[in-house]
Image (cartoon, rainbow, N blue to C red; front, side, top):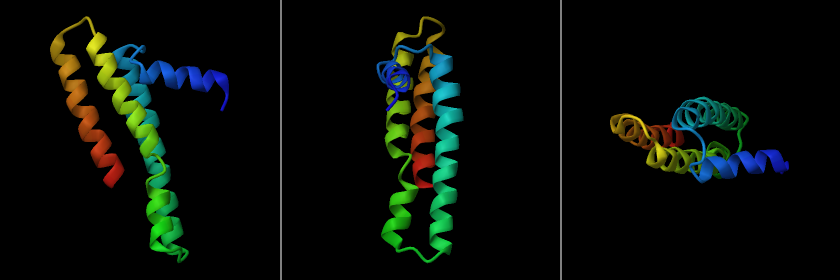
Length: 104
């Protein structure tokens, strides 16, 4: 893994990114794209007749990133200096997003 990517993922994991960036860019944009590609790939594998276990594994490939993004947003919310309602909403929505994105 590229050291720059590793550094960015560690910054996200440790909650060192601004809340808006962690939530909107890392979770909502990148995470949703990763889950969309995982779903498309798993549906393609299913239509090609792949075994159900393989289809499920392909679908769950974005799960590690979902965990990193969710934890990162949660920790960034803990460092947020603005209105505490935004931090609480970010925490609630990132949990809901992670569950829905993983299951759908």
